[in-house]
Image (cartoon, rainbow, N blue to C red; front, side):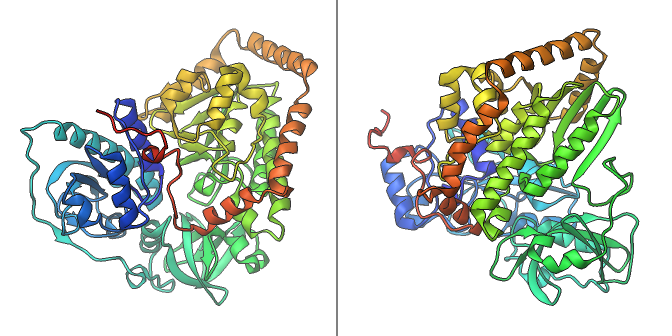
Length: 553
């Protein structure tokens, strides 16, 4: 039972099914719907990894229900991770409790802890909370099967909802560290209530600035889509905002007034040596160039795709032998930017511009003749991002990353990024059709097993492992021959069927999605951006609602 099929729920679903468990999912829509789902599936165990309200007594009194609480043993109440981040706790954890009448007060089946790094709540949730949650939940499931295991009851301390009064920022008096902690604790949802240009809004996506300062509270300038605001002892970059009644957007999109601020550009693509906001950054180590793109939530707008294409072409002119496309810390890429599309005067036109811009980037990677290219997927990837990565010569993915290489969940999108060229040679025509039809998440190990990606590397030390492997590629004596073979393969494929033909065929279908009579894509995009509550659980998740579902003996 879950509020939505988020990254943690996806990971647990994959971990449990890979261990042979039969798993079905029901979104928490209402008590009656949940009761019906339980009656249909008759589960041996109910797991609640992500809920926003209590499990009804009609269920937890008749079935064992394990709740994954993002807090240490003894912590009780909502916004547990928010409180921990904002108060600067050095360590935090995850606890698996049995559901009872009092929230988070049931017996403890398992727990795990982790150091609490200085980072956004959404990042900690996708990484440390997810890893600890998997560890604790799998242990709890094993213990449920042990008839002699008795979960422990422990005393606890409850806290309430973190209200905006507790998150409030005083830009004239608060330090950068204090404000950053508040913004980090509220990132994802609900954001910090504030105002810009005399308008109320919620702020997200903060970054420290290591050099520039100014009069506290003043907006000092902008860089691309972010704005720099002075604090009592320095300054912070603000990347995203949500205006009253609107949805989350890059800050200059939410507030076009910000475009009048003085521009504070970087000297170039090279990674800054001091903390600052830089969504595209380049580094070199010997013969290897590393291109990072830290795009919020992995969404790539038209302008971001243009700038990343420019940065990639610049990187290919460097005297390197291998280029590693690192993506961001939490996401490699999730494809086109649905929020900026929704905000456009013509979402159809902006969708068309965005898909063409990301196709331009994919084509630049595909046609790189001067270096070997590696997509190092250290964060989650979805939709077009999964296929954009496949445009590289090698794709190395971190174990634990969740992949969603399908488009159809977004209103039956056909998809582009040259998937029709890249996928069949790797997995066959039937395999390509299966991946595109399959609306469930894919693990890194499964992607490699299918032949979609090339290597699954351990989570700990992933960045170091990628750098070592890339250096070995660059130092290999046969690299010139590999580059020649790469150019020959591309020429042979071009002669057989030009890339332009694949692109035109894909975009012909995408044009129907954007401009055709079927509004499914526009409806699905609106509900995604507006965060509309679920009114039903998709059938590919709720297997208990299949017409041919039979309760196993």
